[in-house]
Length: 281
Image 1: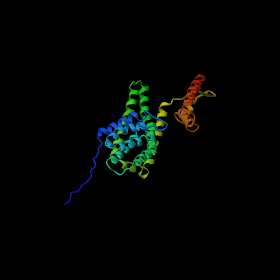
Image 2: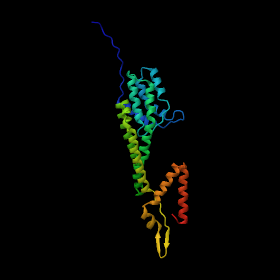
Image 3: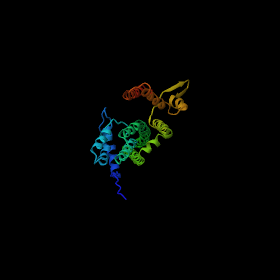
C-alpha cells in the first residue's frame, strides 16, 4: 500500500481577545481620521489591523492586499450597528486566510452593500430614538436640580452603544456571511426601518411636548367678559397647541425650506425676546 501525501494548511484561529481588540480599536478610532477620499477607511483599517497581522503573518502578499482592501472608501454609522460590517469582514478574512474560496473583491462588496442600509438603521435608531429617550430622562433630572443628569446621559448613551454594538459584532462574526443573507431576506430591513422610524417619531413628539414651552398672556375682552386666549381658547381646543405649532414650524423650515439650523435657532431667540418685550409671549 503506497504512502498517501496530503498537503495540510496551518489553520489560523482568532481568539476572543483578538476580536475584542478589533472591536474596541474600531470604536475608538472609527472617526478619528476622515478624508474626502477615504472618509472612515482609516478607522475601519485600525480595527482590522491586528486581525490582518495575525491571519496573514506568513503571507506578506496577502497581507498587503488585505491592507489595501480595508483602506478603500468606507462610510457608515459607527457607534451602534457599524461593528456589524467589521464582524462580517473579519469572519470572511478568517475564512479566506484558512483556504476558503473567497475573493478579496467579495469582502469589499459585502462592506459596500452594508454601508448604506446599516447607516440608515444606525442613525435612525441612535439619533432618532435612543438619544432622545435618554436625553428626555436627563433633561427631567436636570430640571429637578439633579447634578447626576449629564453623567447619566453620558453613561447611559455609551452603555447602550457599546452593549448593542458589541453584541451584534460578536453575533455577526459567529454567523459570518449567513447573517447578511438572513438580514436582507423577506424585506426584513424595510420592516426594521419602519419600526425604528415610528419609534423615533413618537419619541421626538413626546420629547417636544414635555420640553417645549410656549404660551401667550393675551386676553380678549367681550363686553364684561374677559377671555384668556391661552387658557380659555387655545388649551380648550388642543392642549399645548402653541408648542406643537412651533415644533411643526421648525420641522417645516428645516425640512421643506432648507433653512439652516443656526438661522432657525437665531430666529427662535429673536421671536422670544421681541414677543416677551411687547407682551404677546
